[in-house]
Length: 309
Ligand code: FAD
Ligand code: MG
Image (cartoon, rainbow, N blue to C red; front, side, top):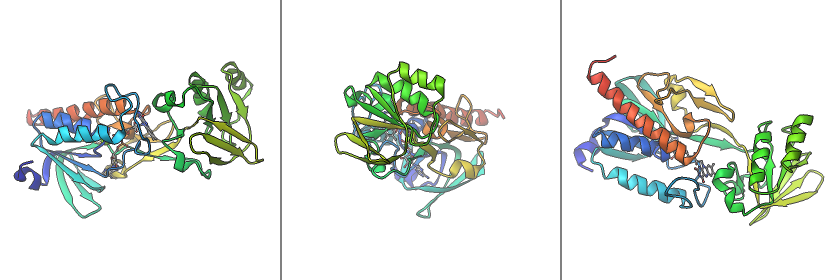
């Protein structure tokens, strides 16, 4: 990286979040020969999982080796600056945004791409959190196949558990633990019956097990499954979009930055991509979303230079 670029704190675009979405956005900007600064706190959502599945050409690789390869390829472009750190403040408007970090750095950029992802909030059940990404997961497409035919569990966190419990039987015989979060009506019970789902009412008291998951109910009964699916509630991982005044949409699992089809937010010059702005989340979708945001941020710079408002 040439030193004149690395010392300059004013760039064409600042990409906040350097995981799948942010890396994909940055790659498009770098290939467009633009000066791009990536600020990344290094805590991707899937860091709890040993392997990432379902991303074409990378199936089964560890989440970090995928991003390490992508980052090495990105940093080969001379106009890219990388900063490990956490952005804590963003302000300004198109052509003049400024971003500050928790370690006191300030950067200026003409466009912003927010790719900071989400954080997962899980029910407060002893033993659950430490199994997240291992035997407790949220997405059957990501991890269902590895549970080798089940048996499987779904821990309800809301009425959306119906959808999950109807889906999961394709990966193994399924038990739905209601845990006071969902009361299926007669029609829903019939749908679950048709999918051979066992419904277990009552509160879940604790989760245990090493290679599998033992679900212990309040009355002491236990059921052991190979994997437990839990739809986490999600929240934006950074306050930046809110600070900038971006509009939010209430998604099924939590708030999302509102974007149009080219990933522009409601604030001119600010783009958002990946889990922060997607209802259906995966590495593949985050990469596609990031690529779109990167191209859109570039085109926005080009159109401004051409005098188009
Ligand atoms: P993230 O990957 O979450 O990256 C966001 C980045 O922004 C992080 O590096 C974070 O530290 C950084 N950041 C946040 N705030 C700031 C800030 N203020 N300043 C600077 N940087 C910041 N999907 C699959 O396709 N296959 C799988 O097998 C799979 N397994 C999963 C397992 C688990 C346990 C979980 C929870 C999710 C899994 N997913 C999987 C989903 C996948 O992790 C996400 O869809 C994907 O990570 C989204 O990419 P992203 O770039 O939008 O966000
Ligand atoms: Mg990212």
